[in-house]
Amino acid sequence: MDDRKEYWWVHHEAAVQPAEVDFVGGIPVSFRFIGRAGTISAASAELIERLPAPPRPVIRPQQPQPPVAQPQRSGSWLWFFGILLLILVAQCSGQLFDLIK
Image 1 (cartoon, rainbow, N blue to C red):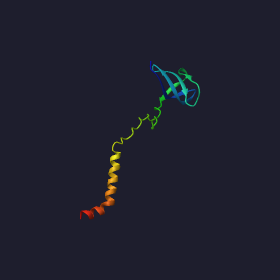
Image 2 (image 1 turned 60 degrees about the vertical axis):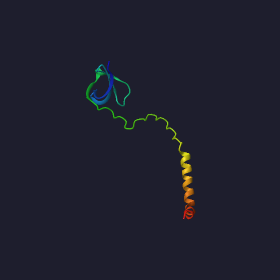
Image 3 (image 1 turned 45 degrees about the horizontal axis):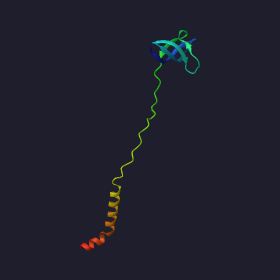
Image 4 (image 1 turned 120 degrees about the vertical axis):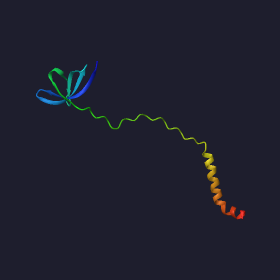
């Protein structure tokens, strides 16, 4: 069977109030007035108009992300020696230029 809860304006005891309505198979079974405790039989109240669906949260809980893999360090020594070579060439470029002349 189709069991669901919907929000409706309900006329009960000369007052119209919003309520949570329990449906079983498309038939209202009971009411719970918003802001009050307890339920009331569906036979003692009248449905007026359905309320719009409650808003959904804008920010949804995030699912856990897989752990980030460590970057590969296979070329790190190559970079190290390359930078050392550049520093050496920059320091000795004047003397090397004089020797080549």
